[in-house]
Length: 168
Image 1: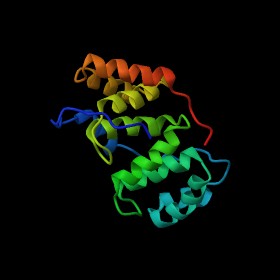
Image 2: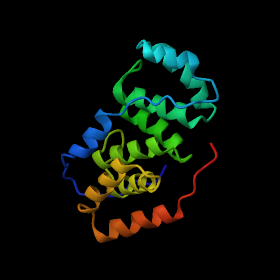
Image 3: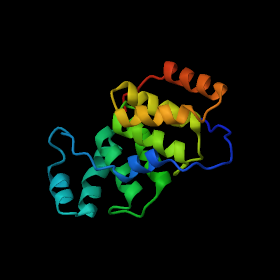
């Protein structure tokens, strides 16, 4: 995980971030046919089964399953709501280049949900996601940059230039 940065102590009301987190839906990407039981359980709101199906996949490094667990922890679906645990799963998926996880990390760092509020990290993850075509991330990045110092922007852009996705 990237080191935490010192930020202003004020907390901003980020309507865009709230919108991004409030509208997160569990994605059902094709996971080499491994989500059939989980997908059916999700359709019926059986999140305990969804969790039991996705957890082993996530532990084996499947980015889509990691993202889905992050969403479950964010929303408290089938698990106790835990933003820090959501960040942990989102980070694993985001490090593999999973665009939705990168978007959610950008929002969580920007708002300080599950992590200390960190505009540099918020920008970093939002920019990575925006570079893959995610419009919500581009809006968040553009909103966030107006609140950042020049030094924070330089630091965030350096992180973006140096970033390389992991394999799992």
